[in-house]
Length: 153
Image 1: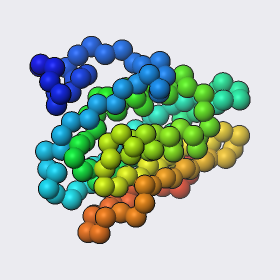
Image 2: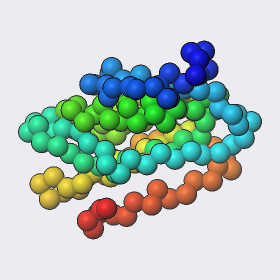
Image 3: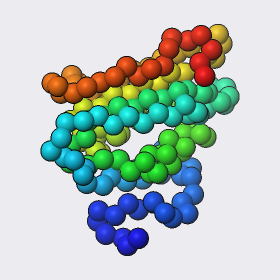
Image 4: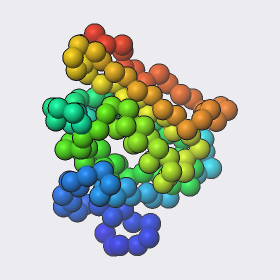
């Protein structure tokens, strides 16, 4: 695989996990169907970060939906970015909204939403949702499929 402006930077290469979300580089490639309105979904059922107060691990089921425009996010770079939160101390809201806002700002899709379904800490599950605005008319948007908390898994 050659390094060209449109070639993925990480795909097919041994790439270490970034140590922080700020260090992580998200890779975008041209949308092969830019003339079509469609939605892409990424699901991360084993997302982890750290509580900024106690340092204890927090776990979430993250669902990212977006309607691409000119570019799409390359999945290995997204996996590395999400993995970089493993040792990152932040509240649930900061992680969830920050991921959505970074993807939206860099990729500039037609629309993006993220659902962070956090497992209980102290007996309270926390779900965090963010979207860039109203979805484009005519976009099929299935439910995210994560039930209200009853022992997620």
